[in-house]
Image (cartoon, rainbow, N blue to C red; front, top):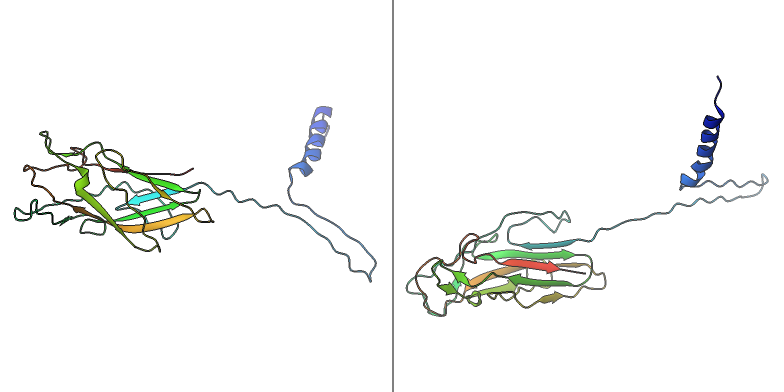
Length: 212
């Protein structure tokens, strides 16, 4: 069978390129029968770690196992003071939350240095008729869950809260969680009605975590 000069040239070029594509190596050492020759070979390794930032407030995926994922569930916390309690200044516990009783799981996992956390509302809670309840009436108390330090909670306002900065340790990896207990401060008598709801009347607070 005849092979054209062009094909021969192509095969020759390919054979010359093969050693350039290979990353392993071989090494042959020889010596007399009584000698102890040594041979070495080298391999380079590389591990590429992606940047991750996980934030959970309420119902969400597990973060203790390292299998981080997104969950679209949004919880509703409801406060229902009785007529006898209204405006008494006695805080009202909520219902709902993934830990029940107005208590939510809060967690951050990150691997790229300090993390900044805040919360944003679109305005005071409204009943749809022009009457409002300020978000300063919704308090958040952080207590330890599994991490040694409880993840601090932003203080809610009618706009964007002050930033909370989580300082990364020497490893630059942050894993902090907490139980966030929400309560209604109940310091004044307000007009009857339902204020907020499911993504209505400024009910939704957006928690945001950022890192470098």
